[in-house]
Amino acid sequence: MGRHRTDPRIDVQYPVPSGARHRELRAFAVFCIARMERELAGIDSWVLRVRPGQRGFEALVAVSLRGHIIEQLGAGRDATLAVWDSLCNVEQLLREELRAA
Image: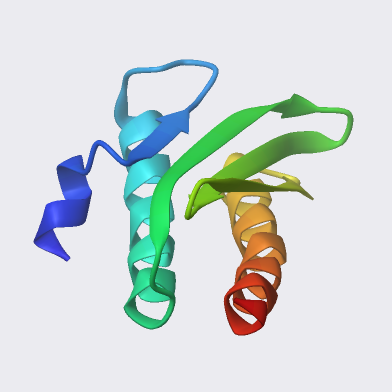
C-alpha cells in the first residue's frame, strides 16, 4: 500500500487542490483503488475529478485499462460519498472488461 500514497498513476482533482480536505479525499480514494487493484490487474492509471453538483458533489472517475478508457460518474451529499459512488460504479465495469479479455 505504501507505493500508492504518491503513485503518479492516481490523479485526484478537487476544487481546492491543496489543504487537508484534498489530502483526506486522496487518501480515501487511494485506499479504495489499492483494494481494487489487489484483484484487478492491467490498470494503467486513474483520474478522479470531484466538483460541486446540484445536490452535493459529483465525482467522475476515468480508468485507463490496457489503453482503453472506462468512465463512471458518482454523486453524493459530500465529496467522499461522491467518490465512493463513482468507484463502486466503475468497479463492476472493470471486472466485466477483464472477464471478457
